[in-house]
Length: 77
Image (cartoon, rainbow, N blue to C red; front, side, top):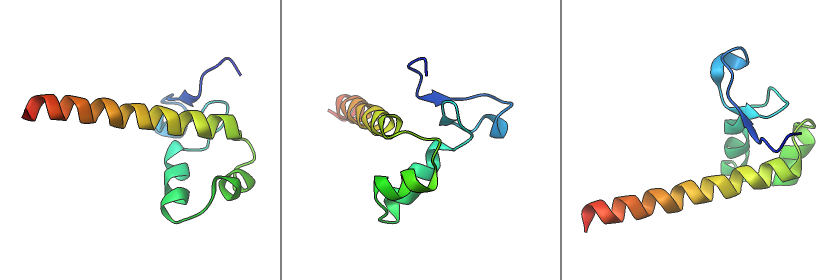
């Protein structure tokens, strides 16, 4: 893997964001976590996805939320 975590390609699932090197949508991870499943269960069900990819996506999501929160607070202050 070349360091990329997410792939968005119109030729793969119509441009749905997927884990790089797979056809597994990122949304599947959040659906599993929302339903209470562990990362390990997710990884067992989607063997092409690595734990490192899952952790990186969660870290990226956290950064996006933190950044969005800061922007929202600045606009409402």
